[in-house]
Length: 77
Image (cartoon, rainbow, N blue to C red):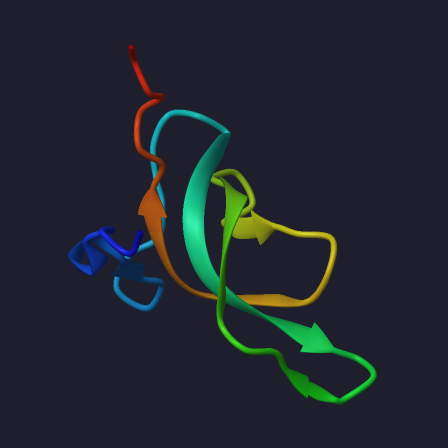
């Protein structure tokens, strides 16, 4: 099931999402701050939106996004 091409990941220090939409949903590789352990969690993949007006990821917790890629188009049968 690991057939995703990792060449599509874009490091955040290279480029951030941009476009005409105010919110751009992306697949991201990120780490979340664990307040109980006082350290960053293991890397995980999530779907987050990026605010082009505020130039930041829309999250409800302390998340460090390391890389992102555009979401693929929906499946068409």
